[in-house]
Image (cartoon, rainbow, N blue to C red):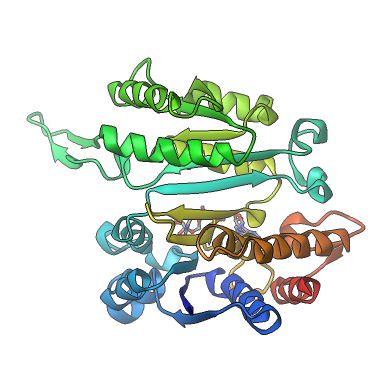
Length: 358
Ligand code: NAD
């Protein structure tokens, strides 16, 4: 049966990098009979400019009907002064909650060819392979009440609410344990249980779930220590599972261990395995329109789509092998360039990966 992919390029470099990922999907369709159809729609600032909303009804409907969503990135200076309710980032949050995408998988893998691109010593990061599982639809980002109020003394006060129900913790916990079963069978749950009751419950639920996965070793770590350990000795981790806010910060930190956020894909899954796939970076307004953005994170997001939603693990591995091959050939976009390599633009990198697929 034909699988439908909603393609949402978004803003800034989003359109440039998604075009390369679409080339890869087209090549797989032509050369290996991948049975898909793609339909494009607007999201983020681009959607606001035309429809007055970062997530127009027709985009959400398309995303809901599709088997998988391929997203570029949203946001940019142009829309920064808009009311928070219609800022481009709201389009992204709306997609995540509208599609029930609660499990965000963010691999941080260091390609051996890029060990020098990391700011850490090669021996600390070489061979790094971490999977950060971040809860995506709860926590302080969505908790009520929230806002800015005026106190009796006239001073303004900002407030947000960190909140997790047992069922929310349980489903992300199970997602992490299932992934660990396919990896090195180690889960590190990150919380701040010494200070926050919300994460005290988190720790309790994780401990309970672990009984159903006797082969998996569960450890707990406070988030401040986890941030330190990620930089000190990142290879100690296999799967890290954490809430929305801690995961937001730790996954960017893990990303930087690998040298460039232009290399890292992500998947956000619902309970049935439907997913939205996107690079972890943003719309990079500083380099947008120049044709120099690294498309690899987006192309590797397609590989994750093939593995987790389209059930085509061999094609996923083929994309990953093609990326390895072009890195071996010495091709580098500016963000991962080191002297002696061949500097290429977005389209040239995409074309090289397509050529390496077959
Ligand atoms: P960013 O990730 O867009 O950029 C950070 C730095 O990394 C920039 O110097 C950029 O040039 C570089 N970079 C990012 N992706 C790259 C790539 N593929 N190739 C080469 N270099 C790359 O983060 P930012 O600058 O903090 O945010 C810019 C905009 O993106 C903001 O509006 C922000 O809200 C938005 N944003 C969107 C998402 C998303 O859509 N998922 C995520 C983060 C930020």
